[in-house]
Length: 212
Image (cartoon, rainbow, N blue to C red):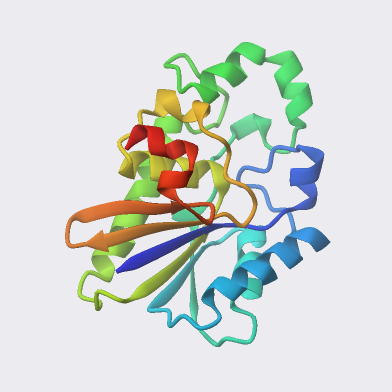
């Protein structure tokens, strides 16, 4: 079974570098085009199921990915982005200037990271992996050639992929962020999970390859 995990398209807040987290923002014109183009990956692919974060930007992305298709969509809060607490809605440039040490602590998953109301990297990863495992177990009886589409967010996706590649959270900051509409693939066979594609490229051709 193959899980296709796709990040949402570009939003106005992405361009502004405003911290989205679990606040809602909408795709901009470029984000719509990104999602429509990514939809070509699935145009001729039969989908066992479609799951999406319940955030507006992922809902919009999923709709544009599917286009005229009539696949039913299950929306899940567990697939939402990192909750950034009181940082949500702020500009990254302001937070980076005001709290550089705490920003570094987050990106490097250091134990002293603390922002009021925010998830730690470990909490985000645990939530994301638990959601993915629940879906993988739900479809455990599907045919080997079955495809499941999951639409989520960049930071939580990176942590999920890191888990399945056995990359420490403290190492993930060394890898590039997943671009908007990045298409990643996890092949699932019983209890085996193998990441085969990162952002549309075979993993062997990406910087993630150094951790294999």
